[in-house]
Structures are given as C-alpha cells and as structure tokens.
Image (cartoon, rainbow, N blue to C red; front, top):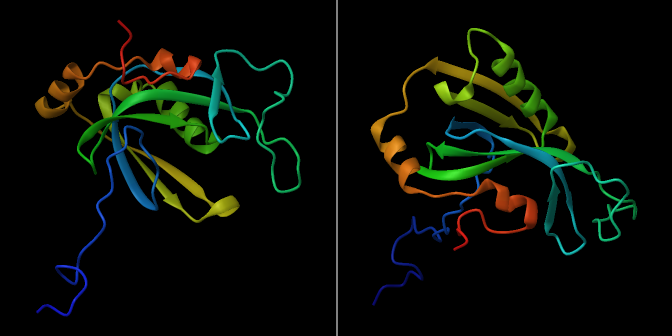
Length: 173
C-alpha cells in the first residue's frame, strides 16, 4: 500500500483557466488583438466591478471602503483582447494601473512602435501591495502567428458587455 497521500510528490492542485489576464510576478507577455474600450471603474462592497464610459459624477453609495472606512478610488481603465503566451489562450486584459497605461500610451504615440496590435508587449511586475512596480517593454514588430489569429477569429467577445456588468464571452441572441 502506498504511504503517500497524493499520487506523486510533485502533485499540484489544478487551477481552472481564467478568461482574464492577470499580471503575475516577473515577466508577463501578451499580444494585443483588439482595440481598447476605456472608462471608469469602481468596486462595490460586494466585491463586484462597476464600469462606465464616463466618470461617475458623485461617489457611488455601494463603493468599497478601505481599511480606514474611506471610499476606495474610482479608476480609469482600459480593456482589450489579448493572447496570453503563458496559458496559450485568448483573454481580456483590463488595465487600471497608471504606470502600465502610461507605458503603453508612450508606445502608441511613438512613430516607431505605434499600434500595439503589431508587436508583443512584456510587462514585468515586481513587489507587492503599494510597493508593486511595473515595467512595460515592447518586443520587435512581427505578424500575428496563425495559431493566435485562428484562436482570435473563432472567439466571439463583446467587450462592451463590461459596461453593463455582462459577460463579454457570452453573446446575446
């Protein structure tokens, strides 16, 4: 009889794949596949995001409170479809971190880089909490490979659903 609890010493609990790209420590490489939608976002006390195309005129009643019982910040966000090289799948990347937005905006505004759909982007995440920093680095221009193009063409995503709290991966009939 096997004395070990798991079938092998290197057993890992499987994680379910997410449809949303999340920055992990170290390098995170992705390919932008769609144009961005932009807007404003806050999190509710029930830990749900609420998004709008325009800035909220007043502090929402259900906004999440910080540890000092103050309303958390309403943030500007971008959302777009990406290819996640690590998981090898199509995902939505939502960015509210100003340093990442500034880095990508600088690339878009630069005549030599331009539209980020024409090259891969690496974002390196370091640190934790308030000490987290991000570095944005473009990779050389290259065409989207066939596997990525085929996966994107077969996936129907409605980014606009983010504004209404809907699921962008479930298309309405």
